[in-house]
Image (cartoon, rainbow, N blue to C red; front, side, top):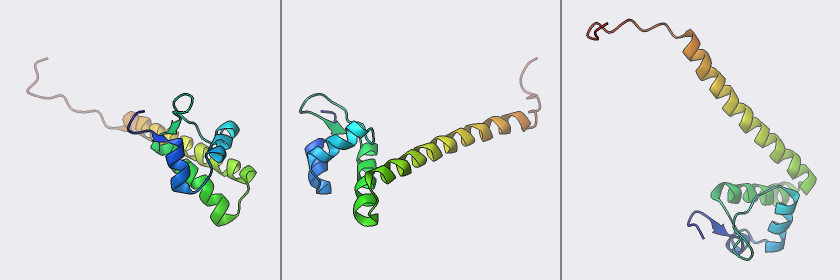
Length: 107
């Protein structure tokens, strides 16, 4: 398994949850695992997402339906943030003053 992939049982043990809970999160579409069969694991971004899910449930008492809404909103905000950044770069390119010709360059 790739070194950046953390095995499902390791994640479950570190977060003090059952591997079956992780499988349920996958089936609900809350997280995505990589690998096949028993060699399932998660990329670091998915482990952070799992940590968020367990934190929302344990620390804040939010049920899985609420967690799903929060995650969807977070994903949407992230997408919009990246899109806004791209648009700002495009706008900057459009309004940037033209560069004067380099006198050392032959025409």
